[in-house]
Image: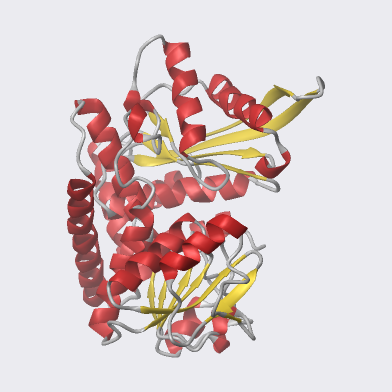
Length: 408
């Protein structure tokens, strides 16, 4: 895996050069405002104690309280968490959300922990992190965490603070003050961004391949199918399947939920080659970073790539794809639907006014369309790809907040 932190800062420098950002502000944004590393002692089921390493990166809070996700996976690095906090700053600013960028993580493999061990780990994260609440830093979910983990985080925080504070943790169940549509938000957004770009390119209703059939990839596929697109290929960690006539995504979801894999789905064939090289109109990488690089970019056949994952296209691949006429909807735009719904969740928690799923989706779609149109307008005005346009859009907002605060 390449250095995702350096990749993030490369995008930052490119945008800073385009907009002639003040050197002092660039230096401030090139490193987290605050980075914390700490350990979490956990009593294991057999009585022994394990020590887990955890991180929290707060990139900047000029634009508002820092937030979001908490990633739990083996091999997690400080650079990965720093990069994700920078991405969160950009996503919030791109989507006009009054928040800075935050990201947390624990170096652990959830699949090797019992439920009790996992719960003690998650609660220990909050005890050791000591978050300051909805007006300062708001943890949320990411790879390796879910609504259940966020419920434990909220309960632990409220036990420590001694008061109910539903807005202090994002991505929690609706029963605890979470937002309707929270589970689907990112996927709904990816699908809408894909549809907007496809319509512009004359690809509406085209053939789609989705790499990664987790929460985001599956919701994206289901939503695009409902819009009339043909999902012809899907992959997960167990393999890839295809059907030129179009997969029945709803039935595939049921199969994957039961079997734990997309492989073996009735009527589908194993994909003969890598899914990234599928002959399709729209490719949606929805797994991990750097899956498309200089080595496989020349083999990409899709005309439109929509980055549902964070940084799935390495910087070395961007010029190759663009030179061959591909259109890329970058991650900081494509997957910002989730952060938009998280902002809705915080708003609802602070106001004690909770919305229906229809209201959440309507508000989300309105924001998504605005983000797309504004980013495209900057792309045309500056004659730069959407990736640079999105970062410029974000940096202008962050820069204004920093200057008004007298930080330069």
